[in-house]
Image (cartoon, rainbow, N blue to C red):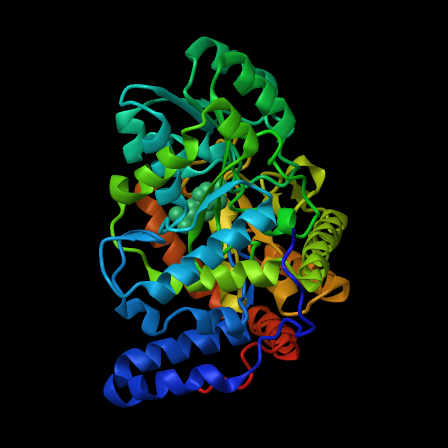
Length: 465
Ligand SMILES: *Cc1c(COP(=O)(O)O)cnc(C)c1O
């Protein structure tokens, strides 16, 4: 079932991409300069952003190339433009690999991103005015699962379930809401949730009310492919995923129908394909499709299983080390690649200070709400950390403990700051905070510590930008 494996190992090295960008250097030095600066930033800093990863040069080569010249609406063998022989082969290969990797009978690899894919699921399954149900954004869910500010929430009625005080998904609340609101679609899958997703429990809820269960595995797709997180394939009717998070690939998304889904609705594959094209999209982004094919190829190799195991091990090491330093972690740990620091024991609203101070020393993260947060979503009390990108660079336990100590030292430095109660005073206060912290000699020391770690785990070594 899995494609044949090759002995070539995952590598961030190879200078071959540099040829394509040399003409940009000559023709558009300003733009070239920014891309070059961004490569420098990625090389010299450490990304703990849970949604990010560092992809191989092979996947990079599959994207950003001449495939973007080709227009092709429709699906392989049924196109609205001529000249799609090789484009059809590429898309068919991506589809074949998605079906094999996730063990599903149908896959659509055209969605331009995760949110778009999820909207296409609504188009496939719902009539305007139907009810949809998902995990609330401030409880770790994703915008596209019915958050009030999105287009979907204007077209459909939205019911939102939450996490309990202990940070775990409130399955009982979800069951009550489902029985009361009779949603057409129920989502399971999160953006800021560090525990195993309760696929089985949600499938019993969906089956009870006749809803479609859609598992959005954007964050854990790589862990599922690598065998370190349960697959929803037996439980969900549809699976959606992005390809650029733990799956360690190009930016894109896939919608899949499971055997269970086709059992409930034999027209499901057709409905999905029609919702993608012509429902919401027209011409395909063929270099992205090739990137997805390359991503899925790497994710099917034995080395990828090792990578996924190390991602989770690194997350556990990092969270244990932080807890030992007295930093609270939501739910007390992690089962996947991420964790949420709960800074309320210092003060609510501290997320922004820690995020900004860490950025100054070269560690990127993002602030995040914690369960029952009394602060606002823009100034929440937590910080989300993930280990996909650092693991792709080759970092292991020792670096995780080192990074935990650096985070502890950074948190100590900013303890005295306090988010002003008055919203109008916040911008000025944050400017003062930035000006004050950047001058601190300890910040400079921490910055050089981070640079040393980053230098020890180089990326795209031969790329000349
Ligand atoms: C990231 C994410 C998405 C959206 O992906 P985009 O490509 O940013 O649109 C959807 N669902 C979940 C659970 C995510 O974490």
